Image (cartoon, rainbow, N blue to C red; front, side):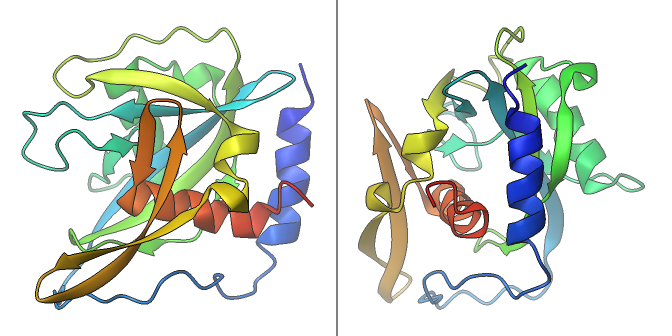
Length: 198
């Protein structure tokens, strides 16, 4: 063990101290969501000296978010907690054994333009955990360094014209992967809460 779970637990307790979520970009979209659907994602960090974050590419043929980089996750079924949903989705998408996941805690809820209200579940997994991606939901998976993904210098501010106006968003490039949109916003929020580099 590397002590990652203990470190994350300390950072989580200090960062999620009851204060309001740190500010991200203002919503520049004209889309109005009447009712949000609950969802959860698993933010799994690998127990190694230089930990990584597990991410995946959605297949290009998917109806929702084709080709985008995402955390394993999806909608919360009736009767499920966010933790249960995140573990179920990680099992269904990447074959991650729930018994090998150590949950640290919840992150700030993020309301996406897609109509989902997303609860990130921060957790650790063994460095050598078996990954078996489901090809219908995962085109590719990868592990990006936590130190890179959580560093503010790598959170690039971008703008796009959408729904009749300019909408701000974040990009986080690493190697050939560019994380953006909701996933990047979740990472930026996590970076502000955990203060990994302080």
